[in-house]
Length: 412
Image 1 (cartoon, rainbow, N blue to C red):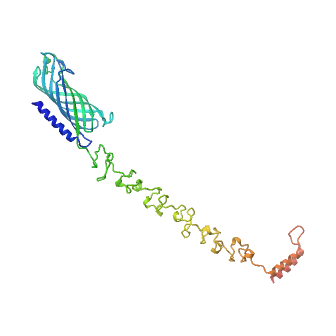
Image 2 (tube, helix red, strand yellow):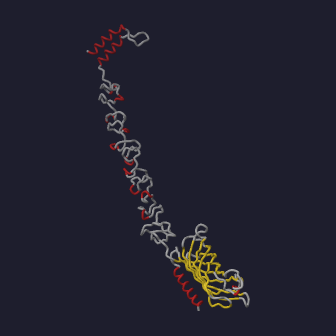
Image 3 (cartoon, rainbow, N blue to C red):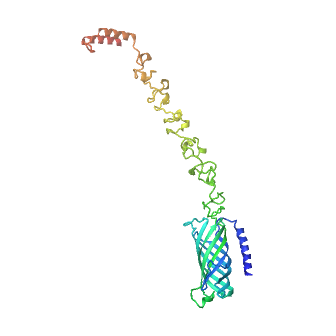
């Protein structure tokens, strides 16, 4: 009757486990179902790996503590006995339960936590109850200390196959006939099981984005922000700036401009940049001013020379109102009708072409005053009578009276 009830409970737990299997990947609780053999060791000898087979079945409930440790409860129900000969043998029903602590090798230091093969060591403490004994076996209770190892083979993130080997130390020596006559220490028994383990539980999701903390690479995502399978905010253009922070979510941009592009790298977004392919300044909406004259290059007719707005950025060095490239005397303040050249004597002849720049003259005389005909005649006559020292340009003293006479005429 007891075995029948155990089978019913086992089937129910199996159904519950499969119902729970569709939950989140981070599952800290586990239900296990197992079956195997009890193998006695006492004064009659050891039944380890010998027939007959004393079967058992059981259940377990485990809880994840940290990557290295689990804690759980484990119970089995079945037969245990030993056959030495027709006179020395016993058979009893055994129900045991223990609190188990396990050290896992798949803790991320020795083996990866999500590894398929997960070996572990386990130690526990509990009770064993013996009943309906036949032969020399006795009924009663034992305090037990299970010690052993196991191997879990993870099939999925919620289902695994598990093998476990335990030796159970007890505090009594009266489960077989020789307990009274010989002293070989307390009885004990081996417990070998194979079973399945189903993991379940609600995963922790600190930022409430639908991705468990264990799988979440971005733990502080704001509420109502769309995330990818890693729990990180979506980044449609792949520029490293989440869409919810990106003012240009469909175009690759830069962080300091909230995800908007800046092709010329001048710190002004392309959408606001009047010259998006030329590095410029904010004063001119992203356009450059190469010569620094306050006129952007796109409006500057002389972008490499500092100029003035009057001439669309071209210079007027002498400030005469004529731009240098049209000024024939760019460093001397002049007049427009002489192409920017000065005329000090105002005779209409530019100083650069005027042989007498400080005396008004005529063009025919290269800017010098006009000479009257009678004056020319006086000088011609004078020159004919003037004598010079031999081999020299020095006028002889004898010619001085002639010069004085002719000069006096010229002034009359």
